[in-house]
Image 1 (cartoon, one colour):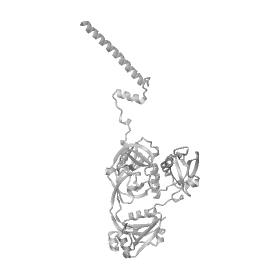
Image 2 (cartoon, helix red, strand yellow):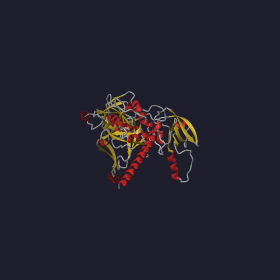
Image 3 (cartoon, rainbow, N blue to C red):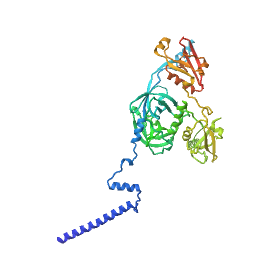
Amino acid sequence: MKQTTKRMYAIMATVAVISGLTGAAAFSFMNKAVSDGGRTPIEKSEEQQASFMRLANNDLPTTHEYIDLTEAAEKACNAVVYIKVTIGGGTRIQEYYDPFDDMFSQFFGGGRGGTQRRQVQVPKRQGAGSGVIISSDGYIVNNNHVVEGAEDIKVTLNDNREFTASVIGLDANTDLALIKIDGKDLPTLTVGDSDALKVGEWVLAVGNPFNLKSTVTAGIVSAKARKINERGSGNEIESYIQTDAAINAGNSGGALVNARGELVGINAALYSQTGQFTGYGFAIPTTIMKKVVTDLKEYGAVQRALIGISGSDLSAYIEAQKSQDENWSQDFGTNDGVYVAEVVADGAAKEAGIKEGDIIISLDGKKITKMSELQEHVTMYSPGDKVKVGVLRDKKEKTFEVTLKNNQGNTKVVKAQNLSSLGAEFKELTADQKKTLNMKNGVQIISINSDSPLRNTGIGKEFVIMMANNQTVNTVADLERIYKQAAESETKTLFVWGRYPSGRAGSYAIELE
Protein backbone atom coordinates (compact mmCIF):
# COMPACT_ATOMS: atom_id res chain seq x y z
CA MET A 1 0.00 0.00 0.00
CA LYS A 2 2.82 2.39 0.91
CA GLN A 3 4.62 1.54 -2.32
CA THR A 4 1.48 2.29 -4.31
CA THR A 5 1.12 5.62 -2.55
CA LYS A 6 4.76 6.53 -3.22
CA ARG A 7 4.30 5.59 -6.88
CA MET A 8 1.22 7.87 -7.16
CA TYR A 9 3.08 10.80 -5.59
CA ALA A 10 5.92 10.24 -8.02
CA ILE A 11 3.58 10.27 -11.01
CA MET A 12 1.86 13.43 -9.74
CA ALA A 13 5.17 15.15 -9.24
CA THR A 14 6.29 14.22 -12.73
CA VAL A 15 3.06 15.56 -14.27
CA ALA A 16 3.44 18.79 -12.30
CA VAL A 17 6.99 19.27 -13.53
CA ILE A 18 6.03 18.57 -17.13
CA SER A 19 3.01 20.94 -16.88
CA GLY A 20 5.19 23.66 -15.40
CA LEU A 21 7.77 23.32 -18.13
CA THR A 22 5.08 23.30 -20.80
CA GLY A 23 3.42 26.41 -19.34
CA ALA A 24 6.73 28.23 -19.12
CA ALA A 25 7.57 27.30 -22.68
CA ALA A 26 4.17 28.43 -23.88
CA PHE A 27 4.45 31.74 -21.98
CA SER A 28 7.93 32.30 -23.37
CA PHE A 29 6.72 31.47 -26.85
CA MET A 30 3.76 33.83 -26.68
CA ASN A 31 5.79 36.56 -25.04
CA LYS A 32 8.38 36.28 -27.79
CA ALA A 33 5.64 36.30 -30.42
CA VAL A 34 4.22 39.50 -28.99
CA SER A 35 7.52 41.22 -28.30
CA ASP A 36 9.37 40.61 -31.51
CA GLY A 37 6.51 40.70 -34.01
CA GLY A 38 6.40 37.08 -34.19
CA ARG A 39 7.54 34.09 -35.85
CA THR A 40 4.24 32.47 -34.95
CA PRO A 41 2.13 30.71 -37.56
CA ILE A 42 -0.44 33.55 -37.10
CA GLU A 43 1.04 36.92 -37.99
CA LYS A 44 -0.16 39.81 -35.79
CA SER A 45 -0.11 43.52 -36.55
CA GLU A 46 1.11 45.99 -33.93
CA GLU A 47 -2.51 47.00 -33.25
CA GLN A 48 -3.51 43.35 -32.76
CA GLN A 49 -0.55 42.78 -30.44
CA ALA A 50 -1.52 45.81 -28.36
CA SER A 51 -5.09 44.57 -28.16
CA PHE A 52 -3.85 41.13 -27.04
CA MET A 53 -1.77 42.64 -24.24
CA ARG A 54 -4.66 44.82 -23.07
CA LEU A 55 -6.96 41.84 -22.94
CA ALA A 56 -4.29 39.77 -21.16
CA ASN A 57 -4.05 42.51 -18.52
CA ASN A 58 -7.85 42.99 -18.48
CA ASP A 59 -7.28 46.55 -19.81
CA LEU A 60 -10.19 47.37 -22.14
CA PRO A 61 -9.79 50.00 -24.90
CA THR A 62 -10.59 53.56 -23.81
CA THR A 63 -13.36 55.67 -25.38
CA HIS A 64 -11.08 57.88 -27.48
CA GLU A 65 -9.99 54.90 -29.52
CA TYR A 66 -13.49 54.67 -31.01
CA ILE A 67 -15.26 57.22 -33.24
CA ASP A 68 -16.76 59.73 -30.82
CA LEU A 69 -19.73 61.57 -32.36
CA THR A 70 -20.85 63.44 -29.25
CA GLU A 71 -18.98 66.67 -30.00
CA ALA A 72 -20.23 66.68 -33.61
CA ALA A 73 -23.80 66.13 -32.37
CA GLU A 74 -23.57 68.98 -29.87
CA LYS A 75 -22.26 71.42 -32.49
CA ALA A 76 -24.96 70.46 -34.96
CA CYS A 77 -27.86 70.60 -32.48
CA ASN A 78 -27.00 74.18 -31.51
CA ALA A 79 -26.81 75.33 -35.14
CA VAL A 80 -29.86 73.46 -36.48
CA VAL A 81 -33.18 75.30 -36.10
CA TYR A 82 -36.85 74.36 -36.14
CA ILE A 83 -38.88 76.12 -38.86
CA LYS A 84 -42.65 76.51 -38.82
CA VAL A 85 -44.43 78.10 -41.79
CA THR A 86 -47.92 79.31 -42.65
CA ILE A 87 -48.80 78.86 -46.30
CA GLY A 88 -51.64 79.91 -48.57
CA GLY A 89 -55.19 80.62 -47.62
CA GLY A 90 -57.72 82.95 -49.24
CA THR A 91 -59.68 82.33 -52.41
CA ARG A 92 -58.77 80.87 -55.79
CA ILE A 93 -60.48 80.72 -59.17
CA GLN A 94 -61.40 77.13 -60.06
CA GLU A 95 -62.63 75.96 -63.45
CA TYR A 96 -65.26 73.22 -63.58
CA TYR A 97 -67.50 71.58 -66.17
CA ASP A 98 -71.28 71.95 -65.83
CA PRO A 99 -73.00 69.46 -68.18
CA PHE A 100 -76.48 70.81 -67.40
CA ASP A 101 -75.54 74.36 -68.38
CA ASP A 102 -74.12 73.02 -71.63
CA MET A 103 -77.27 70.99 -72.31
CA PHE A 104 -79.66 73.88 -71.67
CA SER A 105 -77.61 76.22 -73.85
CA GLN A 106 -78.05 73.81 -76.77
CA PHE A 107 -81.83 73.73 -76.43
CA PHE A 108 -82.65 77.21 -75.23
CA GLY A 109 -79.61 79.29 -76.10
CA GLY A 110 -78.06 81.97 -73.97
CA GLY A 111 -76.01 79.53 -71.92
CA ARG A 112 -72.38 80.06 -71.07
CA GLY A 113 -71.17 76.66 -72.22
CA GLY A 114 -70.06 73.72 -70.10
CA THR A 115 -66.85 75.21 -68.60
CA GLN A 116 -67.51 77.56 -65.69
CA ARG A 117 -65.41 79.39 -63.12
CA ARG A 118 -66.04 79.86 -59.44
CA GLN A 119 -64.24 81.15 -56.40
CA VAL A 120 -63.26 78.54 -53.85
CA GLN A 121 -61.99 79.15 -50.33
CA VAL A 122 -58.56 77.63 -49.67
CA PRO A 123 -57.71 77.21 -45.97
CA LYS A 124 -54.30 78.18 -44.66
CA ARG A 125 -52.03 75.29 -43.83
CA GLN A 126 -49.10 74.80 -41.51
CA GLY A 127 -45.78 73.22 -42.41
CA ALA A 128 -42.58 72.47 -40.57
CA GLY A 129 -38.99 71.63 -41.29
CA SER A 130 -35.43 72.37 -40.30
CA GLY A 131 -32.64 74.76 -41.20
CA VAL A 132 -28.93 75.32 -40.57
CA ILE A 133 -27.43 78.59 -39.34
CA ILE A 134 -24.39 79.29 -41.53
CA SER A 135 -23.48 82.79 -40.29
CA SER A 136 -23.52 84.34 -36.84
CA ASP A 137 -25.69 87.23 -38.08
CA GLY A 138 -28.59 84.95 -38.94
CA TYR A 139 -28.38 83.52 -42.46
CA ILE A 140 -30.07 80.11 -42.53
CA VAL A 141 -30.02 77.58 -45.36
CA ASN A 142 -32.83 75.07 -45.77
CA ASN A 143 -35.06 73.51 -48.44
CA ASN A 144 -37.08 75.41 -51.03
CA HIS A 145 -40.02 73.03 -50.57
CA VAL A 146 -40.20 73.95 -46.86
CA VAL A 147 -40.60 77.74 -47.24
CA GLU A 148 -41.83 78.32 -50.81
CA GLY A 149 -45.10 80.24 -50.76
CA ALA A 150 -44.92 80.87 -47.02
CA GLU A 151 -46.37 84.14 -45.78
CA ASP A 152 -45.09 83.65 -42.24
CA ILE A 153 -41.88 81.88 -41.17
CA LYS A 154 -41.07 81.27 -37.51
CA VAL A 155 -37.62 80.03 -36.50
CA THR A 156 -36.93 78.43 -33.11
CA LEU A 157 -33.35 77.90 -31.94
CA ASN A 158 -32.15 75.00 -29.83
CA ASP A 159 -32.20 77.32 -26.77
CA ASN A 160 -35.91 78.05 -27.50
CA ARG A 161 -35.39 81.63 -28.72
CA GLU A 162 -37.91 82.44 -31.46
CA PHE A 163 -37.48 84.72 -34.50
CA THR A 164 -39.47 85.75 -37.57
CA ALA A 165 -37.55 85.07 -40.79
CA SER A 166 -37.59 86.71 -44.20
CA VAL A 167 -36.81 84.98 -47.49
CA ILE A 168 -33.58 86.05 -49.18
CA GLY A 169 -33.85 83.72 -52.15
CA LEU A 170 -35.24 80.42 -53.40
CA ASP A 171 -33.96 77.91 -55.94
CA ALA A 172 -36.39 75.18 -56.95
CA ASN A 173 -33.88 73.42 -59.22
CA THR A 174 -31.62 72.47 -56.30
CA ASP A 175 -34.41 72.61 -53.68
CA LEU A 176 -32.42 75.10 -51.61
CA ALA A 177 -33.56 78.28 -49.87
CA LEU A 178 -31.82 81.05 -47.96
CA ILE A 179 -33.69 82.85 -45.19
CA LYS A 180 -32.58 85.45 -42.62
CA ILE A 181 -33.32 86.24 -38.99
CA ASP A 182 -32.11 89.26 -37.05
CA GLY A 183 -29.62 87.95 -34.54
CA LYS A 184 -26.07 88.33 -33.31
CA ASP A 185 -23.41 85.85 -32.23
CA LEU A 186 -25.62 82.92 -33.25
CA PRO A 187 -24.19 79.36 -33.19
CA THR A 188 -23.06 78.18 -36.62
CA LEU A 189 -21.73 75.10 -38.35
CA THR A 190 -18.45 75.12 -40.25
CA VAL A 191 -19.11 74.26 -43.89
CA GLY A 192 -17.04 71.23 -44.89
CA ASP A 193 -16.07 69.74 -48.24
CA SER A 194 -18.61 67.17 -49.37
CA ASP A 195 -16.25 66.16 -52.19
CA ALA A 196 -13.90 64.75 -49.55
CA LEU A 197 -16.59 62.43 -48.16
CA LYS A 198 -15.97 58.74 -48.67
CA VAL A 199 -18.49 55.94 -48.97
CA GLY A 200 -18.58 54.18 -45.60
CA GLU A 201 -17.72 57.33 -43.63
CA TRP A 202 -19.77 58.08 -40.50
CA VAL A 203 -22.27 60.96 -40.69
CA LEU A 204 -25.02 62.42 -38.49
CA ALA A 205 -28.43 63.66 -39.66
CA VAL A 206 -29.74 66.43 -37.40
CA GLY A 207 -33.19 67.95 -37.58
CA ASN A 208 -36.73 68.01 -36.23
CA PRO A 209 -38.61 64.93 -37.52
CA PHE A 210 -42.28 64.70 -36.49
CA ASN A 211 -41.77 67.93 -34.47
CA LEU A 212 -39.26 66.10 -32.25
CA LYS A 213 -36.76 68.94 -31.93
CA SER A 214 -32.98 68.48 -32.06
CA THR A 215 -33.05 64.82 -33.08
CA VAL A 216 -29.75 63.18 -34.04
CA THR A 217 -29.41 59.96 -36.03
CA ALA A 218 -26.20 58.28 -37.17
CA GLY A 219 -25.26 56.25 -40.20
CA ILE A 220 -22.73 56.01 -42.98
CA VAL A 221 -22.41 57.49 -46.44
CA SER A 222 -24.05 54.82 -48.60
CA ALA A 223 -23.40 56.40 -52.00
CA LYS A 224 -22.52 59.70 -53.66
CA ALA A 225 -23.77 61.60 -56.72
CA ARG A 226 -27.09 59.78 -56.52
CA LYS A 227 -30.05 60.79 -58.73
CA ILE A 228 -33.47 59.79 -57.39
CA ASN A 229 -36.06 61.67 -59.48
CA GLU A 230 -36.10 60.03 -62.88
CA ARG A 231 -39.36 61.72 -63.92
CA GLY A 232 -38.66 65.33 -63.04
CA SER A 233 -39.02 68.39 -65.23
CA GLY A 234 -35.45 68.04 -66.45
CA ASN A 235 -34.27 71.21 -64.71
CA GLU A 236 -33.53 69.60 -61.35
CA ILE A 237 -29.93 69.43 -60.21
CA GLU A 238 -29.60 66.11 -58.42
CA SER A 239 -26.36 64.73 -57.06
CA TYR A 240 -27.35 63.57 -53.60
CA ILE A 241 -25.31 62.12 -50.77
CA GLN A 242 -27.08 58.88 -49.84
CA THR A 243 -27.00 57.82 -46.19
CA ASP A 244 -28.62 55.24 -43.94
CA ALA A 245 -28.84 57.79 -41.11
CA ALA A 246 -32.59 58.06 -40.48
CA ILE A 247 -34.22 61.01 -42.27
CA ASN A 248 -37.97 61.55 -41.83
CA ALA A 249 -40.60 64.24 -42.42
CA GLY A 250 -39.41 67.35 -40.60
CA ASN A 251 -35.73 66.60 -41.23
CA SER A 252 -35.94 68.55 -44.51
CA GLY A 253 -33.45 71.42 -44.45
CA GLY A 254 -31.51 69.98 -41.52
CA ALA A 255 -27.81 69.20 -41.34
CA LEU A 256 -25.79 66.23 -42.49
CA VAL A 257 -22.46 66.48 -40.63
CA ASN A 258 -19.29 64.44 -40.61
CA ALA A 259 -17.54 63.07 -37.51
CA ARG A 260 -15.67 66.39 -37.10
CA GLY A 261 -18.95 68.31 -36.84
CA GLU A 262 -18.62 69.95 -40.27
CA LEU A 263 -21.65 70.55 -42.45
CA VAL A 264 -21.38 68.35 -45.54
CA GLY A 265 -24.99 68.30 -46.75
CA ILE A 266 -28.54 69.64 -46.39
CA ASN A 267 -31.05 66.86 -45.77
CA ALA A 268 -33.69 66.96 -48.47
CA ALA A 269 -35.44 63.67 -49.19
CA LEU A 270 -36.02 60.09 -48.20
CA TYR A 271 -36.71 57.04 -50.30
CA SER A 272 -39.65 55.13 -48.93
CA GLN A 273 -42.74 53.28 -50.09
CA THR A 274 -44.49 54.18 -46.84
CA GLY A 275 -43.57 57.88 -46.54
CA GLN A 276 -41.37 57.15 -43.54
CA PHE A 277 -37.73 56.17 -43.23
CA THR A 278 -37.05 52.65 -44.43
CA GLY A 279 -33.36 52.66 -45.10
CA TYR A 280 -32.02 55.63 -47.06
CA GLY A 281 -32.05 59.41 -46.86
CA PHE A 282 -30.61 61.95 -49.27
CA ALA A 283 -28.76 65.21 -48.71
CA ILE A 284 -27.72 68.04 -51.04
CA PRO A 285 -23.90 68.25 -50.95
CA THR A 286 -22.19 71.42 -49.79
CA THR A 287 -20.40 71.68 -53.14
CA ILE A 288 -23.78 72.64 -54.61
CA MET A 289 -25.03 74.51 -51.54
CA LYS A 290 -22.08 76.93 -51.31
CA LYS A 291 -22.54 78.27 -54.86
CA VAL A 292 -26.33 78.57 -54.51
CA VAL A 293 -26.12 80.41 -51.17
CA THR A 294 -23.45 82.82 -52.46
CA ASP A 295 -25.58 83.72 -55.49
CA LEU A 296 -28.80 84.11 -53.49
CA LYS A 297 -27.07 86.49 -51.08
CA GLU A 298 -25.50 88.58 -53.82
CA TYR A 299 -28.09 88.52 -56.61
CA GLY A 300 -31.28 87.05 -55.15
CA ALA A 301 -31.16 84.42 -57.90
CA VAL A 302 -28.77 81.61 -58.79
CA GLN A 303 -26.39 82.40 -61.65
CA ARG A 304 -26.68 78.95 -63.14
CA ALA A 305 -24.13 77.92 -65.73
CA LEU A 306 -25.18 75.57 -68.51
CA ILE A 307 -22.95 73.44 -70.68
CA GLY A 308 -25.64 73.23 -73.37
CA ILE A 309 -26.21 69.49 -73.82
CA SER A 310 -28.85 66.93 -72.98
CA GLY A 311 -27.99 63.29 -72.48
CA SER A 312 -27.72 60.47 -69.98
CA ASP A 313 -25.30 58.15 -68.28
CA LEU A 314 -23.48 56.18 -70.96
CA SER A 315 -24.40 52.95 -69.17
CA ALA A 316 -28.10 53.92 -69.28
CA TYR A 317 -27.84 54.74 -72.99
CA ILE A 318 -26.26 51.35 -73.74
CA GLU A 319 -28.93 49.56 -71.71
CA ALA A 320 -31.72 51.45 -73.52
CA GLN A 321 -30.30 50.56 -76.94
CA LYS A 322 -30.01 46.89 -76.02
CA SER A 323 -33.58 46.82 -74.72
CA GLN A 324 -34.76 48.04 -78.14
CA ASP A 325 -32.51 45.73 -80.13
CA GLU A 326 -30.90 42.74 -78.44
CA ASN A 327 -28.39 42.51 -81.28
CA TRP A 328 -27.31 46.12 -80.87
CA SER A 329 -23.59 46.44 -80.23
CA GLN A 330 -21.23 49.39 -80.16
CA ASP A 331 -17.84 49.70 -78.54
CA PHE A 332 -17.32 53.17 -77.05
CA GLY A 333 -14.03 52.26 -75.42
CA THR A 334 -15.59 52.84 -71.96
CA ASN A 335 -18.78 52.26 -70.00
CA ASP A 336 -18.40 55.42 -67.90
CA GLY A 337 -19.23 58.98 -68.82
CA VAL A 338 -22.14 61.07 -70.14
CA TYR A 339 -23.55 60.29 -73.57
CA VAL A 340 -24.36 63.50 -75.48
CA ALA A 341 -27.76 62.89 -77.09
CA GLU A 342 -28.35 66.49 -78.16
CA VAL A 343 -26.33 69.68 -78.41
CA VAL A 344 -28.37 72.84 -77.79
CA ALA A 345 -28.39 75.23 -80.74
CA ASP A 346 -26.29 78.33 -79.98
CA GLY A 347 -25.34 76.72 -76.67
CA ALA A 348 -21.93 76.65 -75.04
CA ALA A 349 -21.05 73.08 -76.04
CA LYS A 350 -21.98 73.58 -79.69
CA GLU A 351 -19.91 76.75 -79.97
CA ALA A 352 -16.94 74.88 -78.50
CA GLY A 353 -17.22 72.02 -81.00
CA ILE A 354 -18.82 69.23 -78.96
CA LYS A 355 -21.10 66.99 -81.04
CA GLU A 356 -23.94 64.55 -80.59
CA GLY A 357 -22.58 61.08 -79.83
CA ASP A 358 -19.58 62.42 -77.89
CA ILE A 359 -18.99 61.01 -74.42
CA ILE A 360 -18.05 63.51 -71.73
CA ILE A 361 -15.46 61.93 -69.42
CA SER A 362 -13.95 64.88 -67.53
CA LEU A 363 -14.51 68.50 -66.51
CA ASP A 364 -11.47 70.61 -65.66
CA GLY A 365 -9.52 67.44 -64.93
CA LYS A 366 -12.19 65.83 -62.70
CA LYS A 367 -13.35 62.42 -63.86
CA ILE A 368 -17.02 62.25 -64.92
CA THR A 369 -18.72 58.86 -64.82
CA LYS A 370 -22.41 59.87 -64.86
CA MET A 371 -24.77 62.78 -65.47
CA SER A 372 -25.31 63.61 -61.78
CA GLU A 373 -21.55 64.13 -61.37
CA LEU A 374 -21.47 66.43 -64.39
CA GLN A 375 -24.39 68.45 -63.00
CA GLU A 376 -22.76 68.75 -59.59
CA HIS A 377 -19.46 69.98 -60.99
CA VAL A 378 -21.06 72.46 -63.42
CA THR A 379 -23.10 74.05 -60.58
CA MET A 380 -19.83 75.30 -59.06
CA TYR A 381 -19.32 77.64 -62.03
CA SER A 382 -21.03 80.81 -63.24
CA PRO A 383 -22.03 81.95 -66.75
CA GLY A 384 -18.95 83.28 -68.49
CA ASP A 385 -16.54 80.86 -66.81
CA LYS A 386 -14.35 78.80 -69.11
CA VAL A 387 -13.97 75.07 -68.45
CA LYS A 388 -12.06 72.30 -70.19
CA VAL A 389 -14.35 69.43 -71.16
CA GLY A 390 -12.78 66.08 -72.00
CA VAL A 391 -14.69 63.83 -74.39
CA LEU A 392 -14.29 60.53 -76.18
CA ARG A 393 -15.04 60.65 -79.89
CA ASP A 394 -14.45 57.48 -81.89
CA LYS A 395 -12.49 56.14 -78.89
CA LYS A 396 -10.08 59.07 -79.06
CA GLU A 397 -9.80 61.66 -76.29
CA LYS A 398 -10.36 65.29 -77.18
CA THR A 399 -10.45 68.41 -75.00
CA PHE A 400 -12.65 71.44 -75.67
CA GLU A 401 -12.63 74.83 -73.95
CA VAL A 402 -16.24 75.71 -73.22
CA THR A 403 -17.50 79.16 -72.19
CA LEU A 404 -20.54 78.43 -70.04
CA LYS A 405 -23.80 80.34 -70.60
CA ASN A 406 -26.98 81.00 -68.61
CA ASN A 407 -30.48 79.79 -69.48
CA GLN A 408 -31.01 82.88 -71.64
CA GLY A 409 -28.10 81.93 -73.88
CA ASN A 410 -25.70 84.64 -72.71
CA THR A 411 -23.35 85.41 -69.83
CA LYS A 412 -25.26 88.30 -68.24
CA VAL A 413 -26.39 88.33 -64.60
CA VAL A 414 -29.87 86.83 -64.24
CA LYS A 415 -32.27 88.93 -62.15
CA ALA A 416 -34.29 87.45 -59.31
CA GLN A 417 -37.82 86.51 -60.31
CA ASN A 418 -39.64 88.39 -57.57
CA LEU A 419 -41.80 91.47 -57.10
CA SER A 420 -38.78 93.72 -56.69
CA SER A 421 -38.30 93.38 -60.45
CA LEU A 422 -41.50 95.40 -60.92
CA GLY A 423 -39.92 98.42 -59.25
CA ALA A 424 -42.85 99.08 -56.96
CA GLU A 425 -43.89 98.71 -53.34
CA PHE A 426 -47.04 96.88 -52.28
CA LYS A 427 -49.03 96.59 -49.05
CA GLU A 428 -52.08 94.63 -48.00
CA LEU A 429 -55.37 96.41 -47.37
CA THR A 430 -56.30 96.89 -43.76
CA ALA A 431 -59.73 95.97 -42.43
CA ASP A 432 -60.68 99.67 -42.34
CA GLN A 433 -59.54 100.19 -45.95
CA LYS A 434 -61.57 97.22 -47.13
CA LYS A 435 -64.64 98.68 -45.45
CA THR A 436 -64.05 102.21 -46.74
CA LEU A 437 -63.22 101.12 -50.31
CA ASN A 438 -65.90 98.40 -50.34
CA MET A 439 -63.34 95.75 -51.30
CA LYS A 440 -63.12 92.25 -49.88
CA ASN A 441 -59.49 91.75 -50.82
CA GLY A 442 -56.52 93.31 -52.56
CA VAL A 443 -52.92 94.54 -52.48
CA GLN A 444 -52.30 98.24 -53.03
CA ILE A 445 -49.42 99.86 -54.92
CA ILE A 446 -48.00 102.52 -52.60
CA SER A 447 -45.05 103.64 -54.75
CA ILE A 448 -43.70 103.15 -58.28
CA ASN A 449 -40.11 103.76 -59.43
CA SER A 450 -39.47 105.90 -62.49
CA ASP A 451 -38.08 102.90 -64.42
CA SER A 452 -40.80 100.48 -63.30
CA PRO A 453 -42.30 98.32 -66.09
CA LEU A 454 -45.69 99.08 -64.51
CA ARG A 455 -45.50 102.64 -65.88
CA ASN A 456 -45.51 101.31 -69.45
CA THR A 457 -48.87 99.67 -68.82
CA GLY A 458 -50.49 102.80 -67.35
CA ILE A 459 -50.93 101.48 -63.82
CA GLY A 460 -50.86 104.30 -61.30
CA LYS A 461 -50.06 104.67 -57.63
CA GLU A 462 -52.78 103.55 -55.17
CA PHE A 463 -54.20 101.02 -57.65
CA VAL A 464 -55.47 97.96 -55.76
CA ILE A 465 -54.67 94.61 -57.42
CA MET A 466 -57.60 92.33 -56.61
CA MET A 467 -56.89 89.52 -59.08
CA ALA A 468 -53.80 88.37 -60.99
CA ASN A 469 -53.81 85.69 -63.68
CA ASN A 470 -57.34 84.68 -62.62
CA GLN A 471 -56.32 84.16 -59.00
CA THR A 472 -57.59 86.19 -56.06
CA VAL A 473 -54.95 88.36 -54.38
CA ASN A 474 -55.31 88.73 -50.61
CA THR A 475 -51.71 89.23 -49.54
CA VAL A 476 -48.36 90.36 -50.93
CA ALA A 477 -47.27 86.71 -50.66
CA ASP A 478 -50.15 85.79 -53.00
CA LEU A 479 -48.98 88.34 -55.56
CA GLU A 480 -45.37 87.16 -55.18
CA ARG A 481 -46.38 83.55 -55.82
CA ILE A 482 -48.49 84.41 -58.87
CA TYR A 483 -45.72 86.64 -60.22
CA LYS A 484 -43.21 83.77 -60.02
CA GLN A 485 -45.63 81.44 -61.81
CA ALA A 486 -46.01 84.00 -64.60
CA ALA A 487 -42.26 84.66 -64.83
CA GLU A 488 -41.60 80.93 -65.27
CA SER A 489 -44.40 80.42 -67.81
CA GLU A 490 -44.00 80.46 -71.59
CA THR A 491 -45.98 83.70 -72.04
CA LYS A 492 -44.15 85.56 -69.24
CA THR A 493 -47.15 87.83 -68.80
CA LEU A 494 -48.89 88.95 -65.61
CA PHE A 495 -52.54 89.99 -66.08
CA VAL A 496 -53.90 92.06 -63.20
CA TRP A 497 -57.35 93.40 -62.48
CA GLY A 498 -58.46 95.80 -59.75
CA ARG A 499 -59.75 99.23 -58.80
CA TYR A 500 -58.55 102.64 -57.74
CA PRO A 501 -59.84 104.19 -54.49
CA SER A 502 -62.10 106.36 -56.69
CA GLY A 503 -63.91 103.22 -57.83
CA ARG A 504 -62.50 103.18 -61.38
CA ALA A 505 -61.70 99.63 -62.47
CA GLY A 506 -58.80 98.64 -64.65
CA SER A 507 -57.08 95.59 -66.14
CA TYR A 508 -53.49 95.50 -67.36
CA ALA A 509 -51.07 93.06 -69.01
CA ILE A 510 -47.51 93.29 -67.66
CA GLU A 511 -44.77 91.79 -69.82
CA LEU A 512 -42.09 90.18 -67.65
CA GLU A 513 -38.43 89.82 -68.59
